[in-house]
Picture 1 (cartoon, helix red, strand yellow):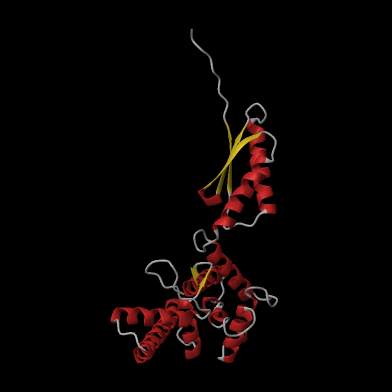
Picture 2 (cartoon, helix red, strand yellow):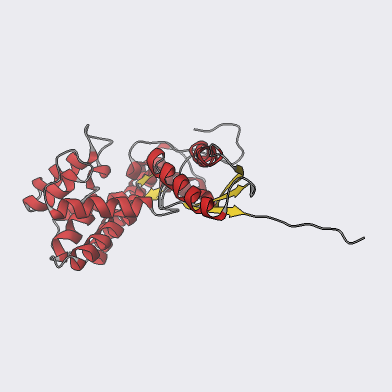
Length: 276
């Protein structure tokens, strides 16, 4: 797409690997300056080879980082394609490596074998590499790929169950679910729209301001901290403690948010006199 924006060409595609191939080819054509059908075809083939090599390298590096050395070559290639896939701004390949590490840590803490946990964590989002080609939830698509290329039933089921498309029924299933949620929910991991962000801050302030005796409320640190100013004549020190607990409980019941929200109730009283 070429519009009125100066010096800008926008590439759009449902297939992230093909989009990257087009970007590389277009950049090379512009740098070369000789743009005609034969040259376009030549540059495209070069870009396709380069991107396929990068995909393969990314898959091999991810498997190496996770300490898994016996993946089927097709799974390695599919995993590498996630290098060019993002989910709410979070790179899916980096997320998969992180989930693998978290699964391994939690499995070790529980006294379980970390290897299958790391393997399931690495493969859990595999379906996102093909969900633009095949219809269905990415967890089911990823499980089908794993099944086709010889992964063990417990690994396949953990991939299939990580979004509860099927019932999680083993510790491994729950570990992958938990690690996936931790990686996605940590502050800054995913981009959210400005509209949703503002709505969340407004909702925090609305909950706090609805309580009797609250004078002003300020949502701070991107909504991770709430400063509540109260009227000292209406709220005592003891009541301030209760108020902080009540507001925190209401936020837990009525809102969804990453991490935690710290509620700080501030009660300030002043004694003023004038020397004449």
